[in-house]
Figure (cartoon, rainbow over the protein chains, first blue to last red):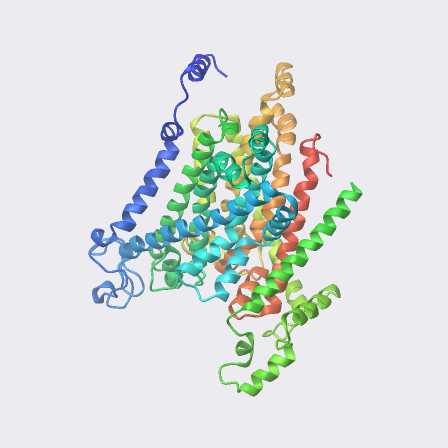
Amino acid sequence: MTAASVPERATARTSPPRSALSRLLARKMALLGMALIVLTVAGAILAPWLTAYEPNTQMFDGLTIEGAPLPPGGAFALGTDLLGRDLLTRILYGARTSLIIGVAANGLALLIGTVVGITAGYFRGWIGSLLMRFTDLMMAFPALLLAICLAAIFQPSLWIVALVIAMVNWVQTARVLYTETTSLATREFIAAERTLGAGNLRILFRHILPHLVPTIIVWGTLGISTTVLLEATLSYLGIGVQPPTPSWGNIIFENQTYFQAAPWLVFLPGAAILMLALAFNLVGDALRDVLDPTQRGRD
Amino acid sequence: MAAYLIRRLIQAVLILLGVSLVTFFLLYLLPADPVRQIAGRSATAQTMQNIREQLGLDQPFVVQYWRYLSGLVHGDLGRSYLQKSEVAVLIWARLPATLLLMAGAIGCELLLGLTMGIIAALRRGSMTDQSLMIVSFVGVSAPQFVVGLLLLYVFAVKLGWFPIGGYGTFGHLVLPSLTLGIVGSGWYSRMMRSSMIEVLRQDYIRTARAKGLARRRVVFRHALPNAILPIIAMIGIDIGIFMGGIVVVESVFGWPGIGQLAWQAIQRIDIPIIMAVTLVSACAIVLGNLLADLVTPFIDPRIRLR
């Protein structure tokens, strides 16, 4: 520690604690992540106004005379795909798919993870061990392989894909919340509450759950990143969201045979996937630093 | 220690049993019909019925699962529906390629991850540190197939340094390993950085420096051996993530491992192969986790295995 940083730290300690939000906003990486998320959400919502084309219209002037896709630039800002559809339009509408699945699948995974983790951690006993043994079992499954299997078995649609992703993604959350709940449940204030005659439901919702909110927020944010990547991977394999509904993964799936000649068809949607996953990772990581008191002061 | 190992091995067997039961049940619920895949579109109802009886698919779930399980304990993984071969033979033929890829990938992850993590820890707070941490974030946020296709495009198509796909020489191994390595190294570099920072804070490091040892010697001989222990535990857990990733990477690069075998089997509903690959992967994950737990007491002697 250098001499210059000492007084700075000292003042930081004595000043009143700032809110989590302002501490979050003080982080450049978190701001970058939030900016990317806002950009993607705006692109997805405003898609019809941002582009003059329809996502699924195959345009006659969208291909060269030889029938090859057009490169970026010109009338089609990001070029066209193999079927002569505007790539920018498909990427903008594809953001809707990614965000809907990101939020829906991850929300469901978070819900399952929270219910399983808290129930097992609070009630212990045979319910607890049964739930946790099942969680251990799920952890022994290779998540991606299981998702691929499930998605291939069921006829994939947007909601089935979301469901499949939720089925494999709740496990981590359950594990983490289980550990936190077991340590919370043995604390004095819970025992005091119980002595005062509070019922299980009251203890769970009024005393345990509020303590877990920071963890749930952190895992929820990081989980969206995992979900976005998983959806893209399933769609890339052709078992995720089905064309013609655009998704960043299936744009690559549809055009990859041509990728040596038209690399933009693979790398532009690829960059979009990377950007969105990165954004949620940056925000989630910053949230963990801000919300988790045990992490404070470390970097 | 022996008692602990025995208990863990029993647990492992139970988990694998559970995995087999769940997978078998999921495949049993399957809306798509494997018999249709085997018999082809023009098959008569009678042919399909015959095939169904031959494979025992007309039996109730419990009977089917029991048959599978009793085969399994005798080392019999069943016959592939479509490849006219024993599943065990297919898996054995594909396993070396996957293990080679795994070794290459873990090698790349460690090389990239540890280097980045150590440099970041030594230059903590600097621009180098921040840039390296952003790079590792980008790594973990990148979809494997996009990284794979990008490497293929740049190094195989444009520069022609490596073959476009396939298997056989060292050159074939580089790009797929690097793909998995780039994506995985982000976790390692973050872990290595925090572990190194933690170790560099210790008193014995200050002592080593105070007695005038060269910085290089302090870092590599005194700090690194201790800082690297959590990484070994991480490799164990990483194996599980790896088993999912191979399906994608092997299909991008045409790598003839069990990932491709699984992918083909899933598309053609070749149930015995899907079961076997799932079990092999689950085995790898369980063993990886066991490895991670076994090295924990070396990381922190206060932790005893119970």
